[in-house]
Image: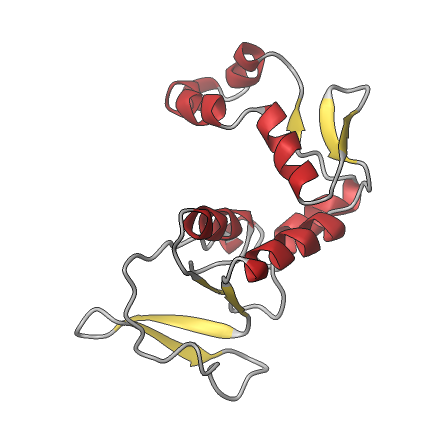
Length: 173
């Protein structure tokens, strides 16, 4: 997984839960930066409204998002959080928040679970593309002199998930 925001972490969790090893690569010095920034205001995780009302919020995208939202409901999200030791509550607005009202405990618990499942987490590594044989290539990012021993360049991977969402908030990623 290249990119260690929520999408990259979710992909790593899915891969490890299915029994696969995984490595996640992040060029920034820390992981989940946008999640942490979102959590500064209380971290609204989801809404507790009826599924059809929630789906209607997505307007034109509702038709293709419907299977995803049905497969991972608000109750599923709350159970996932509880599995990380992070209880949640439904506020007066109908939004779901972690009881801690911060993102950092949730992110720390998530990263710890991934590491316990054998996922290797790398920061300060730049993905530079693919070589002629299809191997992923990396270079040390700012603040790192060499690549981790567990991440040779080129690196042969069975699958690659590009989860590089930093463009939505450039200063974070």
